[in-house]
Each structure stands twice: as C-alpha cells, then as structure tokens.
Image 1 (spheres, helix red, strand yellow):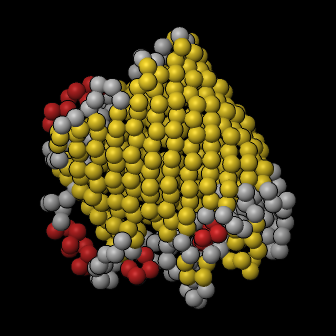
Image 2: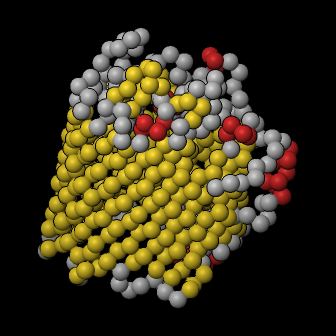
Length: 436
C-alpha cells in the first residue's frame, strides 16, 4: 500500500483536518437500552443503503489527535516527543437481511499522518472480516469467519523497544464452530486458528531487529457444554486446547546476539461458568478455571494458575449503561528467559444519555502483566512485572443520523519494576464522523 504522505507541518495537518470536518465520517450509533433505542431510532440510527437482501453501511471518520508521548518512553530517557496526528478512517459494513442463514462483511482502515517525525511514525492499518452462519436445523447452526488485519504494534511494546519505526505485522484469523441445542443441553465445538507475521525493522543505529522470528500459528480447538437451568440462566463447562507453533527460533527482542528460544508450546484452558440475564437489567457471563502452558525449550518453565473472566452489563436506568469485565490469560513474549506473560485485567465503563443526541461516557482499566516462568540469565535477576493503568472521559454530540462528533481524553500509565520501562501518555481526540 503506497500513499503520498503530508509533509511534517503541524499547521498544514491541523488545517486540513479542520477543513475536512464538514464532509467526514461515520458514527456507529448504539443505544444503551430498549427505551433509548426506540426513542432515537428514527432520528439518529444509521439507515444504510438497501441493495437486494443486503444492507450497506458506509462511514468516513476523521480523528484529530494530540498525544504528548508518541514513543511511550520513560521520561528518565530525556525530553518526551509530542505530535498532532490526523487519522483518516473510511470503512463499510455489509450485512445480510435473510430470514435464514447470515453473511456479513467488515472493512475498517486507519491512515495516520504525524506532524512530528512523520517518516518514522506514519502508518496505514487495515482490518477486514467476513463471517457467516448456516442454520442447519431449527436448534443447530454452523458459524465461520475469516479476518485479515494489517497492523502496527504499539510503541510501548517491550518486544520492540529499540525500533526506529513501528513494527508492522499482519494477522489471519480463521474459525469454525458448530452449535446444537437438545432440550436443555447446549453443545458448541470448533476451532480457531490465528497466524501472526511480523516484518523486520531497523534500530536508530541501522541494525536489523529480527521481528520475523516471532512469526507463528496459534491453534485453539475447544468444546463447550451448557445446561439451561431456565431460559435466562445457563451453567456450562468449557475446555480449550492451545498449541503455539513458531516458524523458527525466536530472537530475544529481535536480537539473536542476545539469545534465541524455541517458543513452541502446548497447554489447555479449562473453565466452569454461569451466564445469566436478569430481566434485561443485569446480564453477565462469569467463569473460573485453570490454565497451563508447557514450552518445548527446557530453559522456559511451565506456566500455570487459576484463570477466568467476568463480563457484566448493568442498566440502572433506561438511559444509563454500566459495563465491567475481568480477565486472566497467558500471552506471548520475546523477553530473555521469560516463557510467557500472565496478564490479569479489570475494566469499568459507563455511558449516559443526557439528551436524545448527547451522550457522555467515562471508564477506567487496570492490567497486571507478570512475566512468568523466568529462569535467571545475565543481568536479569528478577521477574519483570508491569502495572498498566488507564482512564478515559468524553462526550458525543449527534447532529442527525448522518453526522456526529465526539471529544475525549485518555490517560495511560505503565509502572514497571524493570529499568526505564515506565511511561505516561496523555491523548486528546476530536472526532468527526459521517455515515449514510
């Protein structure tokens, strides 16, 4: 994908962004309750273009962003670098309107142009997805999807700390699941396969970071058996097998001189859970279980522990929605001697409709990344542990069903016990969305 970038001129980018506000971009209206949905359906819900048995919903968004720490650096390393960023985000959703079966398509893009050091930071991200459902019988169906994403890794990632430019990678996601209900028993089984491919990047000194050694497949077949206590309450058991298969030995932080590891692994995730819907006011899904990963390289210790998740949605009033979540999982890393990252996170978000066309929202989140399975090597004589904090607040104004705007502020903070790995990031975003 070859694009002609704007020059490194803050005023030019800002002026271009503001002049474009009148013609930009899409608002994907989503109401917080049945009452709010019915009230705003006529005036503010995207209608789309009806083409036969499909509905086409195009959008165009301009996000004007200011960020005070574009490299997510520790301030101990010196003065932080800020920038204005213009995000151009065209996209489209295409959904079928069939009585049986379903077929949907998604295209979303993010073309980011920086006013500061554009040649080192500009990027173009693309997300695509196709998903479908085949209604086999009255109480059974088959779901499948394919997604291709062309993305850039966040600068704060500890796996590319010395990269001159963002690490570019793409993912291919393929899955297929069959679901069947027999009286009160539900069965869901299938497999998800995800492929990661990374591109090598240069350091400031001209050395090559071997990000391509991170290329791998992740296979996760699973089975879930549930029992409907009542139509609104279901207890279930879920078992997931995990297999990570890397193409080659993985270099530590992309530098083979620092060592390489065979990061192939297998494991499982076993959960017992409960899903419920209390008259639409409180819905949720909660589970607890045990997770384990064993690595081929005998220098990497096995990781295991209690895990689970909680997803809740509460509607204290017809105009207010509060959502919360908790998760625990194992993720991949390239850190020396570290088998994987045991991540534990929690988030809480609230949205309120002040008027039919004015919404306000706020949220907070926390994640602990424990670099687990560590075997002491070299100068690293302790387990790395990162605490990630975040908060956001904002407001949306809907002019009509075609145009809206929102203003938001986001704060991010990483507090790490690893040397010069802390950062603070402040972001202010003014979005203009147009849709049809």
